[in-house]
Image (cartoon, rainbow, N blue to C red; front, side, top):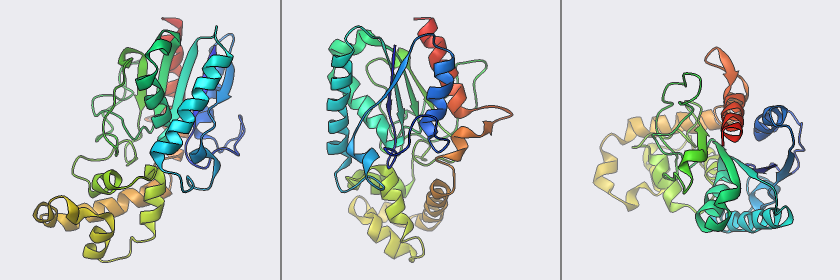
Length: 264
């Protein structure tokens, strides 16, 4: 069995077993629960340069899709477990959406901090589950073609995968071709601007100016807190620390995926 990982931005230099790897926490535990496996990372531009480089998210993800094609072709007899973290989840989504001939090989999919997490899907169906973390993916909603084998986990307060429906960060993400994480890092440099300056920079006036004027102040304050949370652990440490008095979210996701593999 191949455990194929599409990691987040700036992760290419992090080797398996490195404590800095968020997705590595999933693969390490999953490896303990599978008798025969090989972990293979997808190589894609966003993982390789700084906070994602200058390539658009769509183009970067397409390069990752082609690399996933290579991995699948080089191991034709192997079942696949697909794991995505943050911006890397798009590689998994796009590959599944365009490769229906490979679906029979996919034993399970695990998505952590998915920018496309549907509001109805979270770590809720295994051993009693967890409460709804709120919101949904900052970039929209994608269940995908094999939703019965796809599992999500999202930390409460992680704006990448638990973004509230009226957050102005959604508009900024819609108007940008950047990977969401890179966008938030960019926006962090403008947090001390006045509301109207920040709103202009985020492109909020392009959709419905009057609607954004109503209640804009409180929503921008929340957006500021969401960005600060992203920078201080809500998108990273929240997945590797013990959660709700038990396993970390990373380990919970690994256990759920392992259960699906064993019950395929």
